[in-house]
Length: 243
Image 1 (tube, one colour):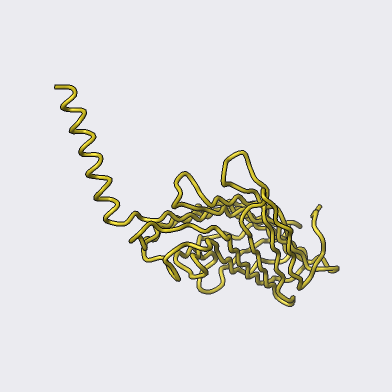
Image 2: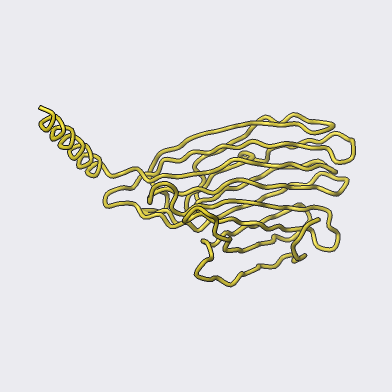
């Protein structure tokens, strides 16, 4: 059962509150259908700064495809300069013919770079399962430029293209991973972390994705020097006290 409203070609805006998380935008374009967009603010979890997002989109009255997600987004992470968004999507093609999906995720997670810092260190991980829903052969093929692209401030910086075998039952694929470190695109601060998935899914098939996309601001060289000096002084002080 898919517990969400059927809202083709419609943007959904949820009222924010003091407990609402950063805005999550999911836009989906599917062969033969107008683009749909879902906006949500998430619910807080037991971890400060971390929010849960559950939602979905479908093909309207025809219900020939479903896109469901259950994600966790963190706008602080373990460090103030870090953020991540998980990749918990389930996509079902309930029709007989193959369909091409283009899904874009943007998590509004402002991360401020410290003075002089302008680089971001990113990590991407993706795995999943492909299932044939009616005993046929299920296939998942990547669209150009890759099946999954990690984005910072709307700019692609990491691409993942795992090999996915065809299957007549349920087949696990991945994990695929990649890293990137460089100047914050459209910086100097991180405004959104997100990703784009582009693929063709065979008829009567379901694919589930898992993994995450994270970014951590690289401290400015000056900050590293100060930290090293402070560490050295601390060690020196301890040596003197132990003398």
